[in-house]
Length: 281
Ligand SMILES: *[C@@H]1O[C@H](CO)[C@@H](O)[C@H](O)[C@H]1NC(C)=O
Ligand SMILES: *[C@@H]1O[C@H](CO)[C@@H](O)[C@H](O)[C@H]1NC(C)=O
Image (cartoon, rainbow, N blue to C red; front, side, top):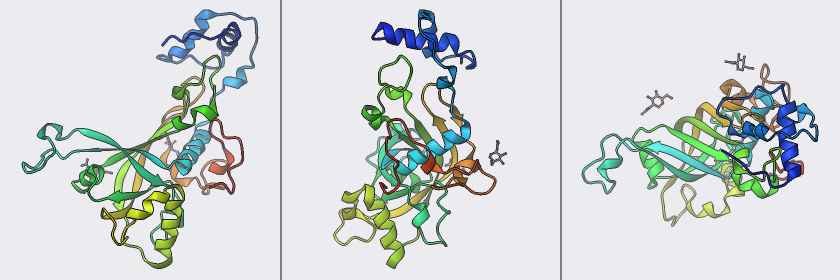
């Protein structure tokens, strides 16, 4: 990857950053570090400005990303044997398919007997007819990719010397299995609907049990078993597998005993977020 800096100023900014930032070990395959090839040491940038967040801070950012994301791409695999009567081509047997679905971070409002304690298992509104949920019904596990790429205009340029770049913004993939929730009634159903409809007002037409709904649906959650994080470019952000105990132990306003340093996902911000989000959710 070769980036052409737009101005001499940017060139100086980026090149001096990486020639002086010896605290950051260059990573193989991080083409961005080739910036240093254009060395121009007219300016000096504090090396701290390119220090990676800790893994725990990154996990807070990841939980915040889940909390703020209304949708994500769920990947499932088609069954290895596709029935002859099916309209699905036999050739896609066993292949993965990624489809965007509505999600919400509503586990914390489920009734106590059902909730996983607000542990970062996303809530999903599943349509029985949808390919994603036909695949899970046939035994597929799943992964869910969510990202911050829609926020490029607020985030602006986050990487020294590079124009605004989606590749510099966080994304995450949650691996696990689908756990259909039992039918809810009364206040439990109302609370979950309220939580979900906050980010998906249109989904009221196909909530579980809605009379006249065009499609039968059910509530489910993704039980997270592994978490893969790409915080941005690897010299300034973490990239890799997260500690699932930390992922599950983080809450909005803190974390479980033995996890992290007392902060919750409300204590971090994603690129471009300006105002404290308290009250905004
Ligand atoms: C789904 O994942 C579980 C572990 O979470 C595993 O035991 C099972 O074999 C997986 N199913 C498939 C179809 O790969
Ligand atoms: C994951 O985090 C927990 C809680 O901080 C810690 O006890 C555990 O050792 C960590 N696991 C790994 C593999 O680092």
